[in-house]
Image: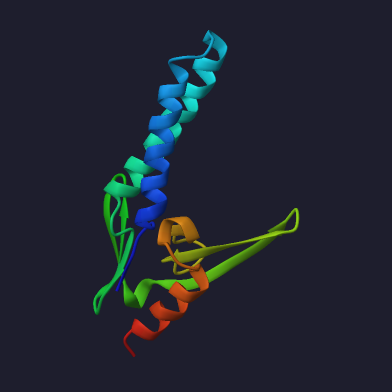
Length: 135
């Protein structure tokens, strides 16, 4: 199974970046800097979403996470899957946590992915990963 950022959200970010860049050309210098920065951020996020497809993939050998530095493969026997939930300002956020640490002396690898990275609720993805895990 594979999970990625939603294509529609990526496309909306790209269009927003182009619109903001166009608007930056017609405003005063201070607005140009602010709108230009926002345009660069939106376009960078859209590009990141496009390059990191699929963001997370699971198969019989383990879990593969695509990052900007390459593909990170986590074998099933070493990976712990959890969902972190936090509430702030009345909003609930969930993160999928993939951890490979085997104790206090083992730094392991920690991967945190949100709904936007996965294109799905992290709790649903964690449930699917638990069903895919052999044994």
